Amino acid sequence: MRLESRQTEYSLYSSALSINQRNGKLYNNMGRVLENVDRYDEALHHYRKAIEIEPEDVRSYLNVGRVLTNLRRYKEAEDIYRQAKTLFPESGVEEEVHVTPATCSSFSTWPPSSLRMKVVWKKRTREANSKLKQILQTIRLFIPFQLYREALTLRSDFTNAYLNRGDVLLKMNRWASIIYIVINLL
Image (cartoon, rainbow, N blue to C red; front, side, top):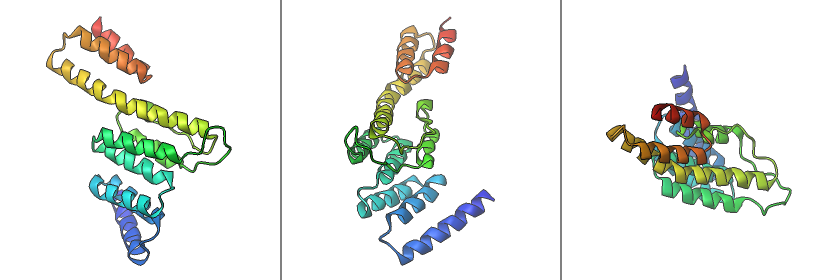
């Protein structure tokens, strides 16, 4: 059923794009369909085309960042998230920032659980900037986290790697993982 639904969505957006190539939302939607079937390079192309058509739409930037993260291109993802941050109005200005809950919850496919957000960013810009800063910090911390994990697979008695990994997890606010590491140390 799901596969059939995705094929239908793919056909629908392909037809729509053959008629109208100047609609950024159509490119975002097609990118989402492609991303859901792990066709990340094609999805990235569609999301970037959406940015080209509607450069002020923050959703496109967040979509590109998410796909780059899935492709483990963390530096590029960080850069695109920084570009997205510039689209938010200055702090304290009452203005709606349209990021859908689906965009935020799509981070659940990315390993760090601290990105599993279920918020709607239609509040003050300060809150949206805070969440974006959290995403950027998590991206920067994820690489050392992975390196410590790999070091521990090579040498499980490497106590300093456990301690350093715990420190990274603390900064990522992942308490359950910290407790697991402490139990392994004991």
